[in-house]
Each structure stands twice: as structure tokens, then as C-alpha cells.
Image (cartoon, rainbow, N blue to C red; front, side, top):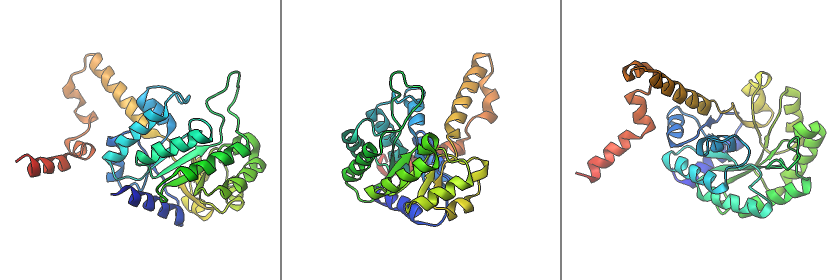
Length: 286
């Protein structure tokens, strides 16, 4: 699928009237498996990027180049429209423009820029928020930097955690005037909060988590939420599976004993696109 078509598909989700859960993926293989299961979009976060590429925690030590390179592998290996967490845009508003250029070239369908102070400053006990004025400059810069008009640019705010409903309402009203396509909310926990957020903006909403009180997708859809994350469990499950398998072998277990704990040939055909490569060999190597 052409990149522009993937981006149009993502826009259709934002313009629709239902709420979906994206697949959290971390490489080409996991993206292919998500696509085969019918997920509409994929999500690649900064934390999972840091874990996948560096084996490091989410402390913004991953560079833009490393992040974009992994995304190129994912978007090249699957037709799944990808949304990504671009953190603070790796710097000021000019850095945000460079971030948009790199991530658009990597094939993403949607990217978000957040208003958190990153990386953590010296002596800082908690992540704060950049000023409204600085964030407006970043969001306007992000919109101006995209070349494909179908690329989705999202604002992300943690104001609910740092200032409550009053602060996030002020920021939502300001952010929506920058030309962005939607707003990602971190930290929403209650139905009342979601209703207040929906009333504060005309833009579609995305949620960074779905606690039990927000598990009803019909309620979320009725309140402007189009995408709700469910965490990044596939990466955590993969990490445990690798550890458990290595430990089993290191402790003297026989490879034959792993038969029921590893991917079947059928699953590997999906994960590795074996059917496509078999066809290419038939068509071009014979």
C-alpha cells in the first residue's frame, strides 16, 4: 500500500465515529503479525523504540536517527499505517521540523509532539510542561514541516497530570488552533475527565491508556475518542519469552522440549513473509 494511502486510512479513522485500539509493535515481524490479525493501525512509542534499539529505559537517550531507522524497517515490512510518539520533537521548534521531515521520510502515517519537558533537567524531581507559547510554536512548526498533506500531526499533552482539568482545557483550546489533526491525552482516568476534554476541543481525541473505567469503547467514541492505547504488552511478552527460552536452554533443557513454546511454521510464514519470498524466488530465480 502506498504511504499516502496508509495516511488516508489513518485520517478516515480520525474522521469516523468509532474508537479503535492500535497494535503496539516494535519491528517488522510484529507489525506483520498485527496486520494479519486485522489491526487497523500500529503504534511505535519512544519507550518501545528505546527498549528495542538500545535495550534502555525511556529516558530519551534514543536519537531521532535511531528512531527513524527502526521505523523505516517497520513501514517497509508491513502495510500497517503507523502512528509514532515523537516525544518532544527532539529539541526546540526547529528540531521538531527536522523530526517531522525524518519521520515522514521513514513512512509513518501519524506522529505526535508532546508538551512535556524532556529530557529530565538537572535537579528536576518531576517532568514538567513547556509553556503554552513554546508548545504552540512547536505544533505550528510540525504542521509547516510536513510535505504530504495526508500526514497526520498530533499534539500530545500531559497537562491533566500537571494542572488538572483547568490547565488541560486551556491548552486544548490553544493547541487546536495550530492546524494539528488531533490531540493525544496522557493520564485520563475517569469518564468525567473524558467528557470535559471532549467539550473543550473540536478535534478528535486519542487516549494514552484505558483503565477499567474507560474500557467502554462506545462511551469513548461518543465522546470524540477515536484511538485508545492498551499499553505495550507485545514487547513485554516478547522480552519474557526470549528470557524464558534462553534460561531453559542454559539450565540444560533440550531444544526438543521447546516445541510447544515457539512459533509454528505457519506463524513464521506470516512473520517472515515466506509466501511472498517463495513467489519472488519462483518468478525471478528460475
